[in-house]
View 1 (cartoon, rainbow, N blue to C red):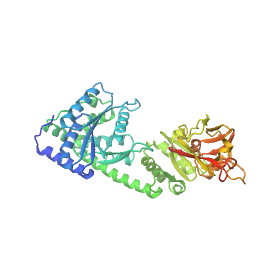
View 2 (cartoon, helix red, strand yellow):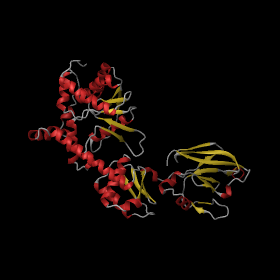
View 3 (cartoon, rainbow, N blue to C red):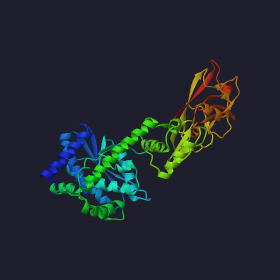
View 4 (cartoon, one colour):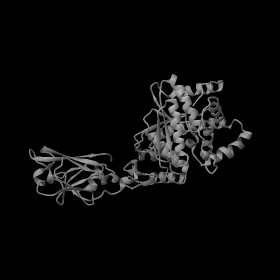
Length: 454
């Protein structure tokens, strides 16, 4: 598949490539090459298998079949043969690409979801100096901010969502290599690759930039690749300073924002904090108008207001003096259909997102004598329920108790209520009603709510 013949040019590229790998990868690390089968990724794979000899890292590859091009299965077959020739394990994943406003963006999202699930220290991608220039121009033409104009970094850890458990480290060791150098390397090594005919379709924005715009720029500015790469690095430095300002203004927390602290800032700095907060939680950045609305509601809302701004699959909500991101489905009311308890020690309640453990105790929990002759059920909140936690004090509304416990409104529907007949005896996260509490030495059953997540 590949010749072993060396030339000064490809040796220079290998040396630079290996230096990048050594900066970011420890010996024994696991790398996964993103392999499309095109010339860039084929050169990447060849360089990686050569660098692995001295770098001491473990190498595998992944090919994502987007099932868009009629030749997609043939490309997967080519990648299998290529990796077999190198003796490199390959994973092939088929994905369904959602057809929306941007086929490119949908395909990228599907591809990166596959990357996020790969067990490794880093996914290695074949982006080069030309890709960097194209990306910067595209971002500027879309009206991006400083962070977007910083384009692609050599190494970055990305999060896919606010609740993501996996972080994806992306390594791009070819960013300083122009496409012409990569093509020269492929020819000198007698490598084979596939050609994606869609790369010539100027209906796609990136292809239009590549084939129609950059050749004209090159006529006057031959070093535009290096110049745009340098500008990108300047933007990246500015983005770091902006992030540092956001941390100084709001604290280095990804969980919540302190509204009182933000009230002392200008609107511009509030928006900067919000951008940093959303980015840290992996939430897609809203447009300028939506971000302005977030800042406006934040600055004008009160502690008791029901501030909620929809941002993709999340709501930015206020509770007391805290601002936090909540999955959009979290505020939907839980079904009130009753679930019968028949003495089980463990009751699965998926509609509430957890498990209710019922443990026999002496002098604790709910009196068995008081519930043995009546139907015991669990259901969701309907409104107006009251609970008496102290026998010498009057009952109180659940709303009041939850406010006192600082349970946000959107979480309250996730707590099951236990009824004995028609009487409320227990509320998860709150406690047992005094009328049903087991006396000292009396046989009781102690409920314990174990939520998967709230």
